[in-house]
Image 1 (cartoon, rainbow, N blue to C red):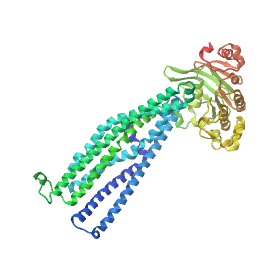
Image 2: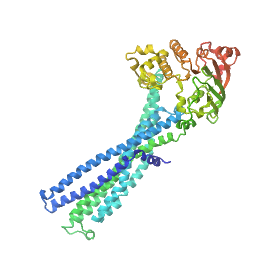
Image 3: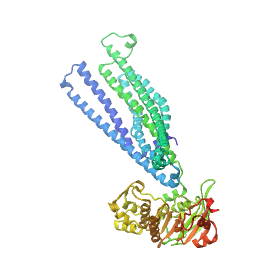
Image 4: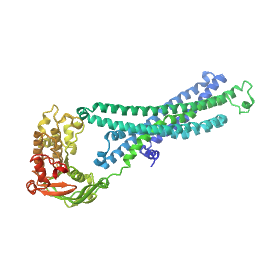
Length: 601
């Protein structure tokens, strides 16, 4: 689908607002014709027929009414056009967000956040000019000039023929100049998204850049990218101004030619004229004034469309990025999320089974190669292994972000692929290594999985997660605002807030993805105490980072190259002398278990 077809295909999102904008614009054009006729009648009566104020007072009243109606029509047209654009922007933004949700974390992990945010914000905002200005202008350009020609030809076919010959020159030159401007506009948009993505990367890594003395280099890089964007922007503006000047020139020439023909023939009413002018049909003062006043109204829609053409170019450049996102096929499990499967029948706590599960991110990149294991109901099972062994893939499969290439994942005795994904996700809680806190209060962040929970339930969950003490010590307690990514809180405090979410969720399955990594000993101890309490009456699947966490597990699964290489308790695996024993020997009883493949040889 071409970009133009894609843009036009979203017009139904505006409902009747876009049609109202065009209809009101057409009414305004008809009022302009009536206004020109009435003005010509008044001037002809006053200047050439000697009419006094008493004779034209009723016409002046009608003229004032026409002025008021045109002002009202302009206001209503702008309002309808803006409403149409707002409806389309909201609809498109909703569609894009929903599609990105279906694409899931695997897509976001490979996308540049700055470019994506730029598309979802400024990119969608750039569509306003297309739907609110360009589309109504293009529709009116196809209607109003024809209506005016139908009025002008009976009054003066010479002026009508002049309009008919000169009018096509405006869109012709608009297309010629616009084709060059569109290429530069697309280049400008790419420069903008590249600059936005780079700025976000630099801001997020500013501390690292400072520590490694690379901030000056990045500052020069930012300057280079900004200058490239400035140059591309000025190129677009230069062509836009040139386009406007050319359109104004041809419109002015058309009006001037009509004025010359009308003026000479009116002059011929009192003075002898050349024969070729005398051959033209005669014209009255009223006809001449009427035609001259309609000439600017005839070219106005054409000039307006040319002026709004840059809005179309900006929309085309932004739409290309949106089409690229929407054309990205979602994983198979996204279709599962869009329809209701069967609810989970298993009672809490329930067990998990991986049966010969294979998964590939792409051809030749196998993450899991026949994964087989069982997590009994109410047990705590730890996953350990080298980086790239498949731990994160296992978690993403359970969370419903990925779908197995082959094999089955059983929840109790039901296949995960048959379950209602939304219902399934309500049965689990996830505590990641780096929890995300959102803008709002601490209480709001704990309520993330249970928005309707009261303060007593929130405090109870925080006490279980060993977070209540530090929260109540804050000036505003649970109403303390939280900055982006938990600014103002320590890593251990953020981790305990995430653990409180899991307690409040009260889910039968809890997935801990290295929940104690990167914490100081005291924070780790508090989080471990919370995990111990959380484990009662629930099934826990733990991606372990420290051996202290592993030793408490009922069973340890050692993953290697997408398979379960070893399985057992801490004592049995240590005595077996395999991969796990080499991990313990390399880092000691309390060391990390996130090793490289070299460490396990």
